[in-house]
Image 1: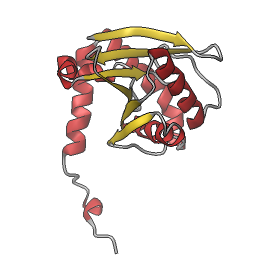
Image 2: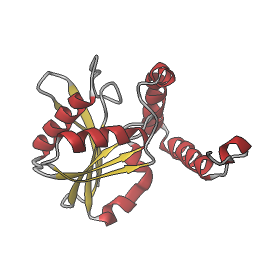
Image 3: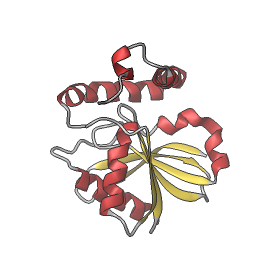
Length: 181
């Protein structure tokens, strides 16, 4: 199963878009995509998700994909949006999985919704999202990934694979191998 054109209207009138993957009767998991990326990120796993026994819902954060921007948003705001999405789906309890830039959002939801979160997993947690260089480039890069996912999925898959492979190579920078004293 893979549906990518889902959305709901939040109580404040903003649109929250999301995609659904995996087994429609599976265990509920909210997947928070990396930065830059979108709700289309799990598509790179293809049909393999259906075999996991998980029902994965991947929402776009505000200003990404078709989700409306939210000025001055906080992690608390994201936890509220997440709770509303879970209510919309009929989920009292759910797991969280966050990749890279989605990691801080997992941590926030686990802290702010402890009665609802069954397990929280962060894969390759990312940098501080309030860093100047991140804030300056994130809207452009997020939009680029979203456009690629929609119009040229093989290109996005190649780019993400290349990024993964680069991160697994040892650095040639000797400073990175110095012992801490």
